[in-house]
Length: 417
Image (cartoon, rainbow, N blue to C red):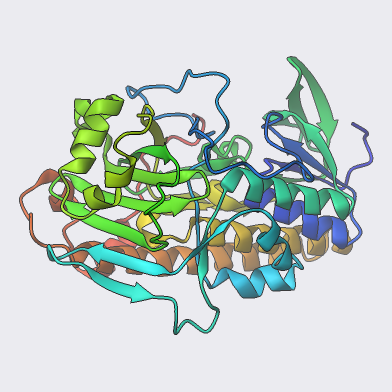
C-alpha cells in the first residue's frame, strides 16, 4: 500500500467494486480492500452445477448457528438481480459480461401472498427483459475484476477503524493478521450492514428483527426447469425458492425471536419447507440428494443516518439495506456505489469547495431510495392479512402510511457498536 491513494474503498461487494470502478475511470487513484481472499478471481472457471452451499459473509444473528464448515465451495445469498439493472449495467459496460459467468435468467415471480393460491407476474412484458438468478460469488468477482481493469488496486485486507480528521483520515487495515495505517483523503464504506467505518460518524437505524435461514440443494434436478422465483407467506413469516446456478435455493424469513428451533438442522429445515403448499413442490426432485445444513443471515431493513459526511461516504448495505421481499438489494447497492463515487469525485475535483453540496445531493438520493422502499414495503406486507394475530404479521400491521414512513427505521443499533 502506498500513501498516494485519493480514496480507499472498504469492501469489495457490488457497491464497493462499482464505486472503485467509477472512481478509477474518473482518473483517481483507488485502493479497493477485499475481505474475501478465498473468492474466485476473474478468469477462473465458473462454478459447476453441483457446487455445495457454504457461508454467507455476513455475521450470523446472535444466538443462531454459525457456519463453521470448512472446505466447501462458497455460496453467497442475495442472488436476485431485477430487470431494472440492465440500463445501469449497460452504462457501466458490464452487461455483456454477465452472459459468460453461468448466471440463470429469472423469468418472473409467483406468489401465494394474501391468498393460498398462486398468482404470477412474468418478465415477458418488462421493457428491460428478464432479470437474473446470480451466482453471487462469480458476479462479485467479475465486478472486482472490472474495477482492477479500470486501474483500482485490489488488496486483500479488512478495514478495522478510522483515525484522524476529515481531509487527513488514516484507515487501520488488517492484512494477513497484521494491522497498518493507510492515509486516505476519502473513504467509501462498503462493509455491509456493519458499516465498520461510517457507524462512528452516524447512527444505524433498523427496521425489524428479520433473519433468513437458507440452504442450497445441490443439483439441479433434471426435471426442475422452472426459472421463476416463488414466494409463499406462512403464519410465522414467509418462504421463497429459486433455481440458482448451484442448484435450488430455499429460504425462510422470520423474526429472530420467532425462529423455530427445528430450522437449525438440515432435517428440521427441510421438513418445515416440505410442509408448505407450494415451495415444497419445487423441492421434490431434490429429496434424494444431500441435505445441507441451513445457514443464517440478517435480513432486516436498515439505514445509516446520515449516509455521508466530511471525508466519507457509505454505499450498499452500509447506507441502506432492504428486506429481501423487495428484491432490490443488489440493484440498490449498484446505484449507491455509482452515486457514492460521483460524490467523492466531485469533492476530490473541487479541492474542498462544494463538498457539502456533493454530499447533500448523495444524502438526498439515499433518502429518496429509502422512502420508496418503505412505501413499497408497507404496501407489500399490508397485502397479507390471513394471520392478523400472529406475532410476525401483527408487528407489520399497517398503522397508516405516514406513520410507517416516519417510524419504520428506529435506533435499534447503537452507532458505536
